[in-house]
Image (cartoon, rainbow, N blue to C red):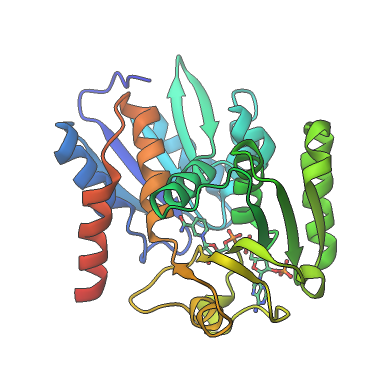
Amino acid sequence: MTCASLSKHYAVIGNPIEHSRSPFIHELFAQQTGQALRYDKIKAPLDDFPGVVAAFFAEGGCGLNVTVPFKEAAFVLAQAHLSARATLAGAVNTLWMEQGQLHGCNTDGLGLLHDLERLGHAPANKKILLVGAGGAARGVVFPLLDGGCAQLHIVNRTAQRAHQLHQHVISHMPPLASRLSAGGLADAAGSWDIVINATSSSLGQTPPDLPAGLYGPQALAYDMVYGQQPTPFMQQAEKQGAHDTADGLGMLVGQAAASFAIWHGVTPNVEPVLHALRQHLRSA
Ligand code: NAP
């Protein structure tokens, strides 16, 4: 996608937005790939996301990253031109204008897949437990199945939401049904190769209330939340015998790289930007 504007303007839009690292990441990608651009943070009022998006593009804006709580609203706005990933996720984190039409994609799953590969835990043939059924979980279910995992079990505090997500995916892709299941947190029991925490529980300093004994030999515990210290979920997993633990900073940089590739037609190198962001977080 090429943007016709002379001054290429991008932004991340959410509410709250102060915490967002997206400008840091995209500015480093731009330096790395020789793109001239401006990347801002936009805090949209909760009751006027469509109005702010319309004004941004009317003023010549080229692309938006969308974060909490607007990913589902972005899906509705771009519903005439959605990527398959966005359709399966029911949520959009990347918007752009093409021939006067708003387009949407969801790159969260690509970011996660890239990070799992970087960590030496590519999903192919793995048994994966996905904890959570909110927007973040919706974005990664299809990419994990598409990545060839042997089994994907979704569990959520509100079990009904896990069942709804399960139904949503198999109604779009019936052949995936044999590898996908769902339940409440208590139904998580098993021996898993990868356990992904896609809940926001770590933000409240508590891990999700999962049964013990989830980690198979060589297992990875992955928390989509990230921070200066290992998250409560990572700490719990380490105590319970997970071989490896990781936070979601690599996923964040990976999803940004996939958005950058859509907008600029060039895929940046994730590794140096991830390193710089980790250093930046540690010194903050
Ligand atoms: P969301 O739509 O608000 O969903 C929140 C999820 O967390 C729901 O499944 C909710 O369960 C669950 N939850 C919240 N508190 C819990 C607790 N104490 N115990 C167990 N489950 C709990 O949020 P989201 O958009 O999915 O985001 C989830 C997290 O992923 C956020 O922290 C976000 O920052 C992070 N994330 C990271 C990346 C990245 O690139 N690293 C990308 C996307 C999201 P109920 O349904 O029962 O309420």
